[in-house]
Length: 339
Image (cartoon, rainbow, N blue to C red; front, side, top):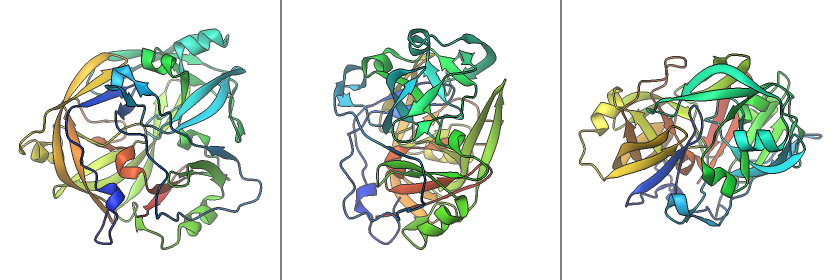
């Protein structure tokens, strides 16, 4: 994000076609460049004893399905059913996801989840369920052995040995928050109050206009979504905070989506989803404000309906959040973004 205090790393406004991917009920990832370590960013640390930690990393290999660009999203190493794999770190995933091919290889017992989701504006996606996925993250340890979704993810996932999606908010417990520290490249646990206090006056707040956690029922799989109050080109919108997305996505029927659509367009974004390709219109240079943080960003406008369960109308992705630290509890979340 960027305010009047210079935050040049957040000002990127890339042109040309975007190639994106929607991987699950609401997972969106757009092609971009693999980020270099943040320069000049001193995110607040956390020295809580006994906290769990997992290191984030990025895969620099070019991906054919993404125009020979590297996969742009944060990853962690871990296991599913004892089988080593990589996890995408995705706050836009209301619940963890395991690829169907990995579930078979790991010998997970999979049943019909009696749940149907949609990949943005695409057709429904069938979701299976694994009640005991036996997942662990390197450095973090074992994850709660609770039901997760099993979905046929795109082939690009298998090519990258990317077999699962971890939802940071799913890891929070009543006593421990999860801190997603993107500048430091770390996922860690800490008491909520201590972690929020550690942010101090650093950077600018994402939460000053209001944030909340929306609980989503998906059969026996419990999901949580991070919602923030935002403004696009002067028009209010409720956005889901989604580190599995690239830029900002707005529903065409929202007030902000309608306003942005009046701009001259900058082409389209082709979305590679579990439900097939989806085309979205792209509009560059929109003024986006979340809390006290401001940025000029491309906005993708999609024709689907708003998320009625969480009353959200779009998403804000990793290219806007890359210099941010999110503190996520079970019933609340906050965050701040640095230079």
